[in-house]
Length: 530
Ligand code: ISL
Ligand code: CA
Image (cartoon, rainbow, N blue to C red; front, side, top):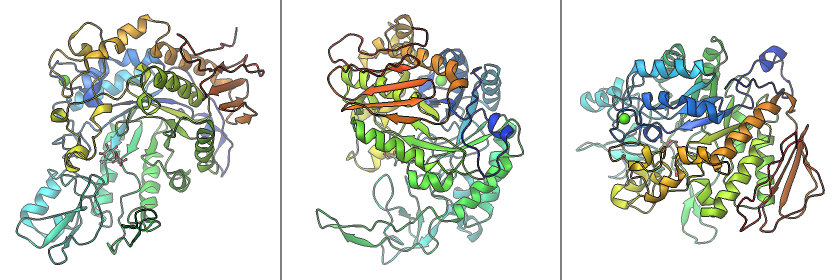
């Protein structure tokens, strides 16, 4: 967006005033585009890059500074793009490299930055490297992945896949197994082999040269696995007594992962304007080790706590402390393509939506970046996807024990009274819930009380206040079930309770939130000039 952000965090460690001052990403608002479900330009039921380009004016009018595009590379789509078969191309379903070029150019013309997703932990099993490793069985290709002999017909160790079952699959008719911390179609790369970091250096340079403003790094701390591939020690579970993995035994997050990001940061440093690295890291302890002047710029401060004032205050402080020794600020976020949408998490329907409006305001006033997940600005809830239509590997590989993540990936509703809420004239890859018509962008744009209108107003206000907001915030004394903080001229109050609260602290310069159950418009937004 055109709104310049000039907020100055404490300057430490020799970062020049100029460098900090010119950072476009500090306090920016990012918007996560789930490419497959955002906008469909050719009515085949699948979102695509030209679709995104056609909606850039919508994103500009929302007031975002940058986008994060989920993976759009050629891929068999076993994990919807997080299984990359070619890191240098565009999945034909999503468009072409030229379409990527136009998207970046048009976004930049509107002052919007474009981050792309990079998936360095694993490739697709259809990546030429893995195909060569299987076909030839030669050591050179196999050494790019983790192949190991099993133990008496069992996997090489007891590591588990995030999608259920062992993290190993045996080759047909052979004693070797290969490692996959996710689906079997996502073999893990061996980052101890120098060929792998060399290839990723090439990949990131390639996309930086094509105008990418930075990367969201998938499973950022997993690259190097512990070298001895030792079993995870098992201890009796605290409650059930059943054997469970012992805490504190790392199979990932090895010291060498930091070398990778120092290397990437160095490469980014040779580009102007500044490019950024956002790690998919949610743990605050890890964030404090990876968010550094010479490593990552950002990671996700995921606010998925239960709706409780002290739990939220604690989480906010934990994430603030995690970056306190760096020049970075937290990147607040509530949803992404892997979690249940937060309106639903916070109680669903009217109540969940009011809480979600309040939490967005609470977080948008804080120092730091904010990541919106597409559809959040419409107040979308988790959708029910009929079991036979589910596609998520998490659902498939857990044999349905996990409902999967399809419910937060359902295509965007754009227009009321049109097939599939205006996403596509063909049936979308995941079905649009019948009731979603009322969530459509066009309907919400017409209503001043919609979630969309609230997001637009708040982002505009944030942009207007930007120059006057310090990087510091202070909690103020607050009644039970309420959080209040001050940040320069801004005061934010958030009521976590069920009863309306009268505050004696005036919030003349900022916005105040109150939840009044049963009222049509429970949110109060006090603009500066009121
Ligand atoms: O979604 C999860 C379980 O519900 C998480 O554990 C998730 O797998 C983890 O955060 C890593 O996520 C990323 O990498 C995965 C991919 O499936 C996710 O979509 C992606 O965000 C494997 O590439
Ligand atoms: Ca399409």
